[in-house]
Structure formats: C-alpha cells, structure tokens
Image (tube, rainbow, N blue to C red; front, side, top):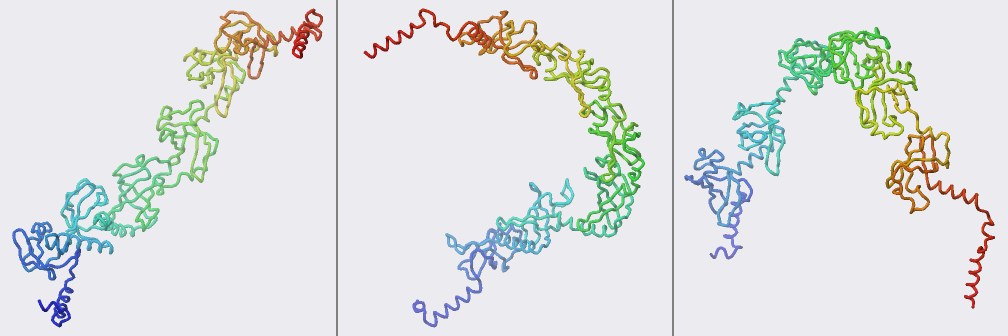
Length: 580
C-alpha cells in the first residue's frame, strides 16, 4: 500500500502512465459500437472480453439467433456490440449485438441515400399499404408502399416475395429510424433507357404502321407501337383523331384495332411521342369555299347529343345543329325525339368561322317563322281562339288558333273584378277561350294575351266622376278593416277603410253594418292610370257640414238672440266678485 501513498514516486507515475496508455487503446464510452472477443459460449449465454472493462459482458444467445448469426459464432471470434451501460445498478456491463447491427445497417443506408445508390433487398412479407423489404447486407427492414412496387397495377405480387432485387431509397426518417424504398423507380429507370433507344429511331413526319389501340380516355386514344427494339405507347389526342367533331375516342376506335398513324411531335425530355390519324387524309375544310352563309343545304345526321345534332355537309366536314335551332316554338327540345342518326335534313348555314374551323347551321330557318305569321294574321289588338294546354301558379298557357305557339295569359288578365288566384282555378286543360292579343315579341318569341280585355271594364263607370263626387253604394260585407261596397250600376267592389266610415271615432265601427244597406259616400281618390278609387263616408260628412255652415250661417248669426250676451254678463259678474 505504500507505493500508492506517494503519487510523485517514480513507481506511481510509471503505473499511471501504463494505465492511461492501456485505456487510450480502447475508447470506452456508452453509446459507441466496440469490438468484443467471444471467450465462452453456453446454451444460454455468450461471454465477451472487451479490453478496458472491469468485467465480462454477457449476451443472451436468443439475441444472436434473432440476428441470424448464432450458428456462425465460435469462441475466439470478434463481434461488434453497442455499449449501452458501463455499469448498471447490479454492477454489470450491458451490451447489445442486435442494436449494433441495426445502427451499422442504418449508417449504411444513410450513405447509400446520400450517394443516390441503389440497394439490394428482398420482399419478406405483405403489410397494410405495401410490403416489408429486408436489406440484404445489413438485415435492416424497410417499407415499400403499394404504389411504389411497380409502374403498372399488380393484382398479385407473390412471385416477387423472397426474390433479391434492386430498390431505390426515397425517404429516411432520422428521428424514428424508418426508411422507405421504391421498386417502381428502378423498373421505370430500366424502361426509360429502352424507351430512349426506341424513340431515337423515329422523327416527325414518319408513318407508323399497324399501331394497336390499347386504351382511351376523355382526352385521346393510346396506341401500342411494336419495334425491333421493343414496344412503345403513344397518344393520339382527341383533336387529332378526325377533322369532324369527336366527343370520345370510343366513337371511332375499338380496343385491339390496328391503324396507321403519323408522328407529329417528339419530346425527348418527357419521352413522349404524339401522333395523328386525321393528318393522313386531306382536310375537308379546304372545300368550305363551296358553301355560302344563308343558303340551304342537305345534311346528314351522324351523331345526336343532348344539346344538338352533329351533321355532315360532306364526309369529314361536320357542323353542329344546336337544339335551339331545331324548332321555332319548342323550347328545350330533345333532338333524339326529332331526328335519328342517318337522317337527311335541310339546314341553312348561319356562320362560317375559318379561324376556328367551325360551321353553324339552323334547321328552323328552313321553315316559316310562326311568330311572324301570327303577327301578320293577328296583330296586337286582334281576337284569337285558344285552347288551355298548361298552367302554373300565376298564369295559363294557350295554344293559339292553328299556330304551334303558346300564348301567355297572366292571372291578372283573367278578370277585372275576381281575385287572380281564384280565377286561375276556374280553368283546366282543354278549355277553349277567346282572348285578345296584347303583345308580340318576335325577337324573344313571346306572345301575351288577355281575357278580361274582351269584357266591359267596370272602372269605366267612373269615367264621368271626379273627386268629392257623392255616389250611392251597397254594403256587401264588413270586417275589422272596414266595409266592402259596390257602387250602384257597377260590378266593382271597393273597400271603405274603417277610419273613413265616420268623423267620430265612436261611430267608425264596421259592425254597425250587416250588409245590404244603401249608403252614400264621397270619392276621396281617383286614378285612372293606376285604376285606383277610394271612397269615404267621413269625407261626405265633412262636405255636408261645410255646405250647411256655408248656406245657413253668417258673421252676425246669433247676435240678435235675447241670450246672446248672457255668457258675457256672467263672466263680468264673476270677475267683480273676485276683485272684492
């Protein structure tokens, strides 16, 4: 013990030097991967010697089985382990061979990811949303999403499980230690090299023979082209299928058909080849000079849509007959109910747009305009017969005479006196009516008619009347609002408001009247433009009172009566008493 008391002695300093040199050979630090020598192997444990540690670490033999090296390890071998703790609560050293392998494998993956290198792996099992891939070199497990397995949809991938193949690292999560790989990128990359070799053999203007229809979408048709170097998929855009209008490729092609195509574009960056079918034949629009706007031509219906018909002026030169140009009178007409594919119909060309390569035609212009004929035969103010064929909550529609035209009869034009909603209920489909033509709008193709205009207007009864005229009326009914009255000799019903029944508010009670009474009232409002008239009993009383005062009184009235000054004398006598 004496040797350690004096640390300055040569022996102590030499011991310290030897100890430091020994520890410097093995940097003992928790969290580091270090090499350990196998000293003993039992059925349960594997014993290691690591220079610089005060005791031998022990590893469970099951851990070695999990990383697949239990049968390969023998005494004297050196294996990497992760030093987790130099000394735990029991004083033992804690190491892990499995964690060391995982860390080494992760570092390898990080290096490949940074260098954009492909790695070797094999699919070990399917999982939700993809598959699990094992890294061949390190045994690390990685995830491959289902969308990254192949560049084409695959219903069955059993033939890929357990097969060693290349994968591309596309994502590394440093925090969680997760990695995502893609087989699709590798497959697409290989195909890209082959695709470049194929496309380099073509140039714009080349004709591809016997391209096979592979599929189509709303924007075009896909063809498969077979060459000695391999196969190539190419697109024929919807606008390049035909000079005529095509809504969808299935109108022209069937899957498996063979067609010749002309190459019109090559994009080496996107590795895409664009083709055209219509450019293999002459452009029929070059013959458009043979047609004139306003002339009538025979056209063939080649396709029917909800909004109109596609017609051919000649093979390849098509035009749209919009549903609004089929008939003068039928609105929102269904072309399928009028025409069939293959029909030959007469049409007038209404527009030719050479820049937009568009021709507009009209079928109704080949027929006489019934609205013009109606105006010529039945001008505004004429009487015409009609049959009710439809109605709604505010109007009736009548088929006018022999014209295929519906006249609009508003509920306000049914009667001068009746309530519009009640008048509408009087008529049903098939009823015959004589009406008057009120308005014809040729540009809007509308005709308005009236029924009450054929009747005597009860408002004419007031033509010879003026404000404050006194008339006799008959009380029809009464309610809280006032009195409903009808002038004698007229069918017009008028409301006398409660406030206009009497000058005195106590007498202005509608309940005083039970109906049938004949009373006089004065006209308080009369407007012929607005067809509005108001009556007032209160105004009548005011007029009568004013008349009585005017006729039976004067400024000296009452001065000569014996008691005319009585009130004055009483007032004077009262004032005298107050002063006393």
